[in-house]
Image (tube, rainbow, N blue to C red):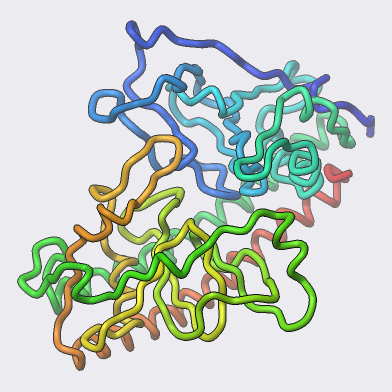
Length: 367
């Protein structure tokens, strides 16, 4: 195997479109790409969306899209249609298929060592970004082309298995939503819907962001969870909340029905400014509320193209279906049983992901 530089075998495609004469109907934003998922499940439309001026970069089916912001999210996706993305998303392809297979490229970029390199070369603290010139210096072992074909075939087969388990998890969520509709009707049309502030006390005054340097200085003594948009991101030695609350993501990759945008915190903790802090009132069961936000399509309450945002003003407009407490708890019990099934499926899915990592290391794709 030969050792090579990423920039010697991969090129960045920087073809720009004229937005006044745009031949494409669809665009891909950062929020349309999921972490460690090579497939694009969502897209935006130029016909219906207010698309920012940064969306000028053309991409073609089969090219690899890479989110250059917050690269620890590992947003690597293979385009399955022709379209447009923002100039902060790299459009990449191999320089020579006889040297590096295009089908193997996304797995190289998902490797731990590539991500570590990308994070290490990133600039900025609140919204770190990397340049292609920095990625170009990444070195890895390049197997002979026949081994690449064998490896690429194996990795895509494993990826297909992982997707199958993801589909089963999604279907489990669909069953939960169907049960909700059977019990209470459509979430957006229910007669039992109340304003969000009737179900929760909004306590965004109890959230505060800390940068990496501040958090690194808060590591001595008793440690408490530090939460962000989608859950815990760190531990620190101080807290601002002591109790049970529901956190609803303010900044998130997606806000469709079934997307995980809420979570429950208990005890002493610290929440940054990427999540709203909600304390349930006495007529609202917190487990039920957490399940409710998982099945509610909140797309009409968020704004933004590169990253969707739920402002406090729009959050207050969300109608919360609030049936009698006993019915809330019955539904929460149903969701708990469903989550147990999902946990088992996710366990298998994680094992499949580990198979991908092991396959990469076996051929020494990692440094």
